[in-house]
Image 1 (tube, rainbow, N blue to C red):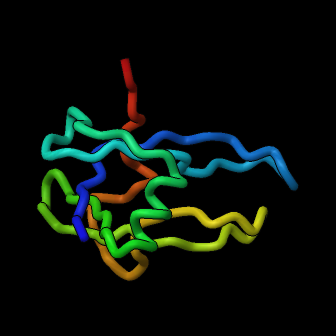
Image 2 (image 1 turned 180 degrees about the horizontal axis):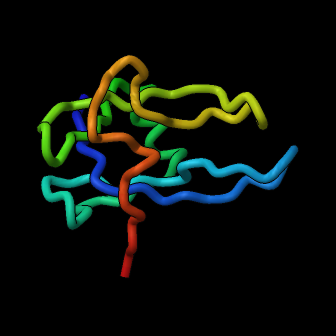
Image 3 (image 1 turned 90 degrees about the horizontal axis):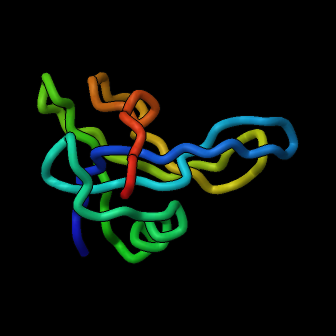
Length: 101
């Protein structure tokens, strides 16, 4: 089991049943400006099922916020988000987009 710090996200539009945004991938690493590894949503979900954990860390507060799975109420797909109930500056929704070369 491993623990991975999410430093960026890749978003995608899901068209059905109505257009909405999901996180479809993440980048992990030790630096907020650079992802050492990139993961598809499927890879993240599989790793989580196998016991790995993912988290975000606030740049200013240093607070760690766990990433969790949830079922999207619009399309019934399994997605990821930050754990609810944690006040922080480390939200997946506000995180920078991953840009890969």
